[in-house]
Image: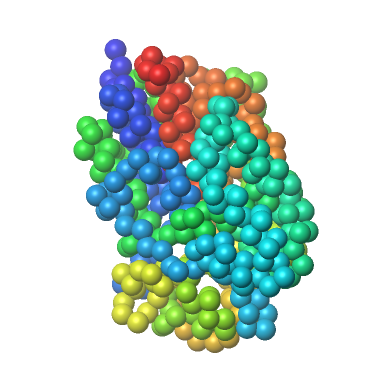
Length: 475
């Protein structure tokens, strides 16, 4: 007889979402985490100086605001308090300028000059239909959408490349606004689907903002783990799993791990032929991440940059495109696109009075050992002269070091796999049910399953719903 109904390996947001989905359906769950604390990509630590709290991986959470899973929770009751800046994100440009994505489409369009009408025509329908778009986009990609027309409109605009999408614009401001959001795909901006990343993230910014969590992203995992325990689940930490044979007997096992880790855990239980498709699932580029303790705010030239948490630092569309193309070709860009977060703008609890924390990464080839902090700081100084004078301390984590810290980050890939067209359509392998593995009762629930990376929990929900149907006869 099984010792427990279900075991979840890994306590990132997806693993905890899977556990909560099962517990809500009356299924007993044990969660097993190798690290000393829960969280996966949502941890917060004192990485620089005493009193400065830094998010270890994920810092800003636009997808959380629209996720059906997180919308089903009373977040404040779980200790998850969202803080939003008046500007969702900003993109500095040379000459002391910046373009900002504000709370509504009209305000943003009004600041884009001659591109205002084109921007409004592109974004307003997406914002108005956002709920109908998010439902299938954050689903398992195998179910029929509730509103096929809304999804078709989004697909028509989002399937092409970001470069294609910006052909409708003539100003460097409008083109840069799309480039910064599209580069979250970690793909060259000439690749299919990159427009979709930019448009979806932009629409969420208009509708719900890009929040951070008060006190740090660790509050997400701590709140979810607390709810797991309240519903009768058990959470173990400090227990690394090296083989599926080490787990308690269970009717279902859900793995919040990469496909390659699944193959390792399966060991001799998986033949080489059956393992081959899972091993072939390719990771995306890595990230070099830097955290700073600052003696005050970043001295941005453009005023809008000081009114937001998130900045896309890289210059014009062509500047960002060159940076991402270099990474795609296996090179380290001299002028990297830098994704930067300054949570102290809305959350003073992150640092001692008057001081701030700063979080940033740039894309690098997978597995890179190169320290990019000098190049990243030059990019920030380009738009914020005197930035280095504010630095009290810094820590650097290369892509190779990221994987040593969190085995799910293969080669420093934070998205759970390359966001190519093929790997988006067939994630992680070409199976009708993307969560089932070849092993009876074993499922994958990580960011390597639909809908992919980001703090939304829907990979875990999709896997848990599959388990409920397959193993417990619940519809």
